Structure formats: C-alpha cells, structure tokens
Length: 155
Image (cartoon, rainbow, N blue to C red; front, side):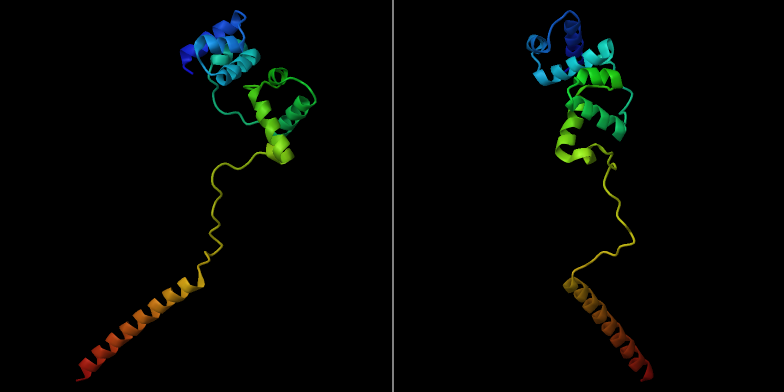
C-alpha cells in the first residue's frame, strides 16, 4: 500500500467510512486497511507517522495485556491504555500465549546462537583414522628421505 493510499484511507476514516468501504474504494486488500484502521483508532492522525524504532515490551506488560484481552477487553481499548503502536500486537501476543503459554511471551535472544569454542568438534572415527594414516605416511616418507641423504653423505 502506497503512502498516498494510506493518506486517502485515513482521510476516509475521518469522515466516517469503515475499513471495508475504504478497501473497496481504494482497491487495496482488506488486511492492510484493517490494520491501518486499528492504528488510526488508537493513534488518530498520528497513525501515518512512522515510529522511531521497534519498541521492546516487557514480559509483564505482554502477559497483562493478553490476560485482559482474553477476559473480554477490546484490543483497541487496551492498545490506547498501554500506549502500544498497534492493537495487532495484542492479537499476536494472544496467539503466542495460546500456542506456547507464558514462555511464548518471554523475550528471546536475537540472532544465531554463538558457538562454544570450548567444546571440541567431534569428527567421525573413519575420518580421524584416515587423517592419522596420511600423517604417518608423510612421516615415513620424510624419514626415508632423511635416511637416503645420510647414506649418500657417508659414501
């Protein structure tokens, strides 16, 4: 959805149009319009202003919001009260809570887990034996050349 379409949608919301009518009028999918409409209901005119960055919400706030949402409070009312960027966050948190319980709401470390350099890498036994065999052959070849050079010097 383009910036112009978002601005037009907010203008239509302000004069009383619903999200379905706006989606039809602008020829845009219903989901993005529904999300924009929810943000507009929470933030008003500032729904179009881009937020400065991703906010991080505490486990306690998420759990409180989900429990209140499940008990019957609306997402929009909760988002206004808790000053969330979008009511959609509460729906996402509720899905995680239903699927994974409280653990789904706890913060998770970002990125790939670090490798522990203290644990040696396990290699298959056959590969280790082949590598050792190559090293021993190289040693035997080296010692053979050393002996050949000694024999040549003694003559």
